[in-house]
Length: 342
Image (cartoon, rainbow, N blue to C red; front, side, top):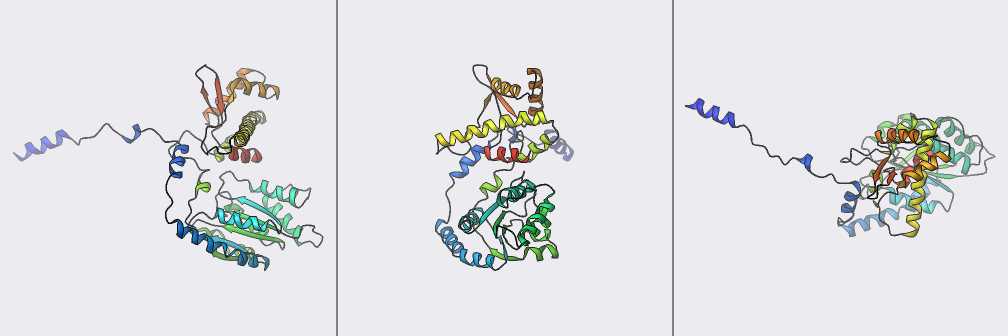
């Protein structure tokens, strides 16, 4: 009797539904950002008061910098807007260099080369990150330096691309004429510094809790539901394994999209983020690459495009009239940084 009901229950099995999450349409990053932008901000008055309290500390921060200390900001929420506002005021005093450590394809060596060549007006820009940091340190330690001081602001000094360069950044921070400001967000960020590095940084710690969303800092990461997209770090990894001609093919499309984005911003200043990515006609793309002697035939060009598509670096679509358009699924800002890092 009991065995009958046991067998009856076992034969039926658990009931499942055919409506699975995998059947739901994927939401694009632009759609998610548009929805998040419509989310009402809570506690506006309290956040405004907190912002005013932080801004009242600008004079104190400036005093600490002039006394030879460097400043590191911590706390919950994005600190980018407030620090940039403070950096704008510092620009009246000396040159300010801002390094975005949250950018996944950041090239610190390129940033230091810009400091050496465009701010310090030195010709020798060769060497590693450590060599360039030592060069800058030696310049400000010299009595013959023409630039007496400068400010370096590093957003997210604990970012993935900067963690291996902490010693070089500490050398910069210890330079006599360099005033160094940085922010951290990882709860274990101080563990990346040993005693020697901390001594060089000579930090003064400030709580800069803002409760602001990390909108800009997280915008460069791959959208979790868009597995078909590739981030800037992945693009640089792919380009590193390609020939110079292939890199030139990528550069032509990237520069085209950057130019088109600038034109769109000038003609439509109220254009919202997440708008359609500029696209280049296939025929124009091939002609531009052929004129630059990057390809000799359309077969070679299409073969290279296939490789880019396989790595999800370049995407294409077909218009209703049958014409083909190609584009890189990255913003103009990302493309500009990638080109500088190539």
